[in-house]
Amino acid sequence: GLGDVYKRQLENLMFRRLFVHDNRMFAERAFYCLYCRLNRSDRMVKGTMFSGESKNIESKVSLPDKSEKYVKTIVAFANTQGGKLIVGVDDKNHQVIGVENDILFQTMDAIATAVSDSCMPQIIPDIEPQTVEGKTIIIVSVEAGKNRPYYLKSKGKENGTYIRCLLYTSPSPR
Image 1 (spheres, rainbow, N blue to C red):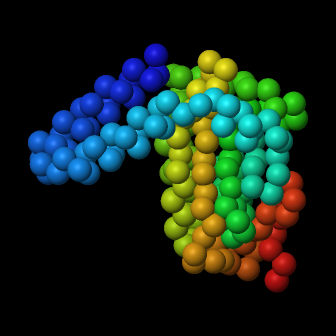
Image 2: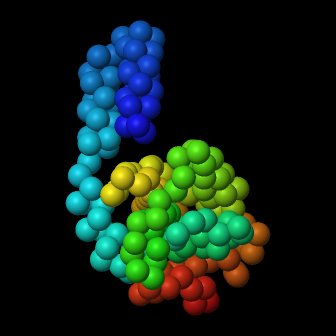
């Protein structure tokens, strides 16, 4: 399964790190972090998702065709308290739909590229797959930004700055 793929990638990464850097402590810490990520309990993720959308959580069944629709949310998270965009969960009934494994990494890459290309100052979200109820979802975690205001390059600082208010992303008051 997907976990086995991660474990093989992890073993390969760990071998290269040990071989190239001979830094055993770093490799052990990195291995432990990735091991914990792979074995994280579904209950933690479900508890977050099934509480519904909030100021810090937004879910999407799939990515909209226009990246600006979800990048606004990422900008708003960075401008407020941070948050998580969860892809593969129905925002109406909180049902786990999942993201097809054959497009999983392509979707994750599309999110990273859209955020990198669209936001000023740069936002670097943590984008990771997570298995819940046997289906894979994508969790995009955004920290509260330290270089506010963040905005969409295409709209400029004046019109492209967003904040998160309750359940919605809205333009920042000027």
